[in-house]
Length: 334
Image 1 (cartoon, rainbow, N blue to C red):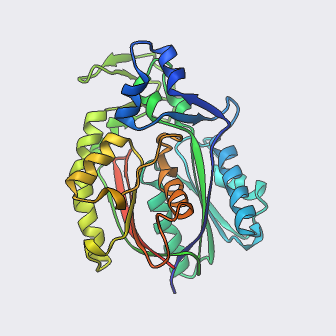
Image 2 (cartoon, rainbow, N blue to C red; image 1 turned 135 degrees about the horizontal axis):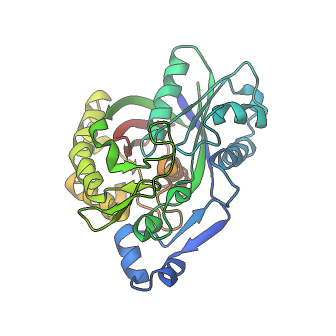
């Protein structure tokens, strides 16, 4: 038995914040400087009352409509989010009911960020190969902007909110190959929201300046950009080689690469270090920003629609970041 991606859709919130909007708040910046470094000109932000669950539902409904999918055909639901609607119950259980998926289906949330799409595909493939499910709905949804301090101009320029939906089944448009996954929890505090969970439930109001001159707030998202950059450059070249070896594919047989859309500078650095040609490497976050776990699915959908990926292509996808966590696999387009 094999596992396939059968369809992909995504949802972006209505509110759009442009670089011009940010520059009005931070006049010391220029639009050109922001765009040149991170590759983002605008990003979508969830409305005040709009949750990750709400966005995931909209992405799922878009998938159902676009591919004529009956929710009753789905027998497992996976939701990747680090901004769940509740501490409990899991948001996937709420979505099972709201989406009209059968109560005989399995459902659970998993807390991952930048590698979340890859891990979801791995779990979905395992469920199908183990004959536990035949149609697995993967939802990725994140509202990182609700975690950002208003003065955090760096992260506000990078992150956008959004959700993606992917159906994994026993047939479809892309066969899912073999996975390589990894974790390095020693870097957990390099991308973190310290308060709000059980370890530090109450807000502290504490802030300090890190070695890069950025404010580190306990109560808001903190990213050590330098450390994340170094981690990425350390693991991704090896990850690429391991994916090739596990799938018994040569590098020159890969037709296209869709990596997590972290930021333009990081992606270009990875591409150069790994000697990947521009025409095979996806970079497009100008109007979405870094949507965390949804970037790879959004990228795949975009590349398919623009025919950057066509039939018989072999596509490498990877995710890397918060956790610290990473993973990748190869998709074989039918």
